[in-house]
Length: 551
Image 1 (tube, helix red, strand yellow):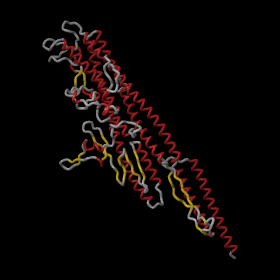
Image 2: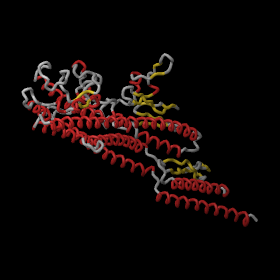
Image 3: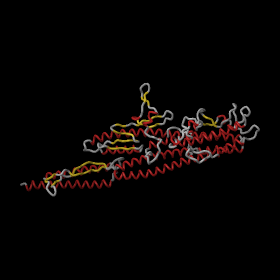
């Protein structure tokens, strides 16, 4: 090679070292940038000049170093596993947070009052009544404690409903984020494909942003993705195309007209009908095949059905307000007194997997049992004393038996939200005189009330066989949610360990190490200086040839 050609070999070293120094400086300046991926300059040899092809070896002269590309240091499998496990962690984070909130509601923190205290006070009032049923003080205490019991029960149930509403609002935020991330990923795809089409430049910073969005998207649900040869990333969310072929499949929300609860569905897959004016109308039937999540599936890590905070929210919230009827496998709107309307397995299919709905149903069952049992005992006492035309014992002016608890809406069921204490008895508790016609005390009725509280004939749900009395029922309900919380927190801790391990492993690949970059900077600087000295040597040789030997 001529001396003039050798100058270009040195220049290639200067250019490549300069690019490497710029890349190292770029890494250092983004040391704390969220989502940034460490970049590295790839180098290769320039095309050789072949002088001859004789044996045993060809005679070739190199033309220096070539800057190939600035590549990102990423590991596909670490990315995939990290995103899957972080999504699973988000699911159990949401579930554990829900349990903590329910523990707060049930754990005696409703405006500083304990529900268990009201239940115990009601039981104590019955015990006091048994000492002297005809005492106006004891009668007043009995009615007062009953009123306190229904008020606090209503407060607990309403708090559960309010938390469902809070989760429902969070669903809107999560779905909006999914749509926002999908739109931005599509825009980034277009920019990356456009920039990299010439096979000269790599849009590394845009790829960093896209990878960060995939990380965020993976926290919300089960995400899979694939990059084609042009650099376009297609994304699936819960097995359905979210970003593909230049299109974004928008996620919409269907609002239940009864509860106001939102159900995410795919707009492109929904069957839309039209009203008489030609306006599109989305119905519950029309979105069944387009729902994003099938919440009836078993939740299992083996099946990957426990991934994403959005799914965790929907499961925790449930799809309606649950009542005692559903524990007995009677769907909402059915008559619990009609065996023909019973649907075997309804509770396990539609209620058991939702934390909020399960507690609502079990709690409502307790209140329903206490209220109906007390009312039945009072009605029975009045009827045993004689018909209305014979005896007015425990009967009102119309001859109807006094009921301690009444419905706020007569046509509805005996649920927490539809129960209060009789205003007549609240104003005049002594109407419950518990004094028979012969002026003797009605101890038999009081003993029945005591026996009702002590009878171990109730179970939390169809999957529990242990019989409980009223007091133990509530204690076991609280213990059940505590055990559920313990399980969720245990899984949450395990997921945190797994996710952190994957994050640290990924950071070793994609993260910027200041020590490593400073080492590279020294190396590339020395390489730059070496190329500079090489050019100086060639320059001096040329000068010597031209000025000394050329005379």
